Length: 115
Length: 115
Image (cartoon, rainbow over all chains, first blue to last red; front, side, top):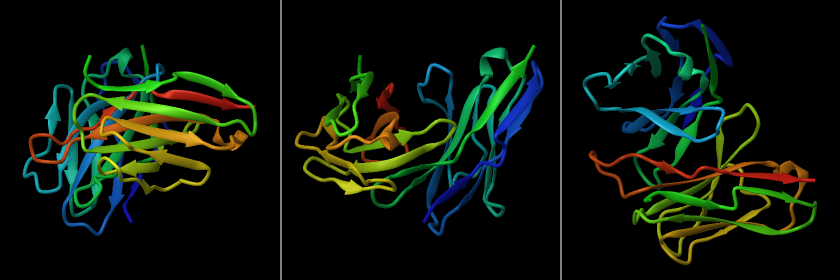
């Protein structure tokens, strides 16, 4: 069974600093996808970035980058130059490529950006 | 606007009452999912569907039933609500996967309180 682990329940960062949110995963499937979502206090799920298991390069989307280390089974999210609006819950999730495309979520990390 | 629409957005039920949550998508997606999110936690899969007329159990299916009679709609039913079912419910959908089209679309959530 697939499993996602986020070991940081909460993080506090000064504005404009870079921040890394940790995510480790466990799967026996050779092919999978990894997602990061942001959930602000308003509650909606906002897609940030995606990494496929066979992608050669780490994914980047604006200020977001994914530090994908396949051998260590980690997919950490890096946010550069953090902003006050980055304060939110962040979820790492893994998609099974075969079958029903189910998305399995980690417990989340609450990020607070201090001015 | 194209996307996933959940109704209702809020609901308060008394223990033992029944209700149905509706998820409607207009993107012709094959796969649909119901998740629940408890305070401070990640999303857990309740039930899912890989196409019209199909449903399957997820991680936490007890106390819920689902139906997908039409491709665009995925209904989640609570036959006899319990306080443990107090949660925020999210519906999500995704198309048949390919490398160019792998994302999930989430509804805005239904906040259910059972008293």
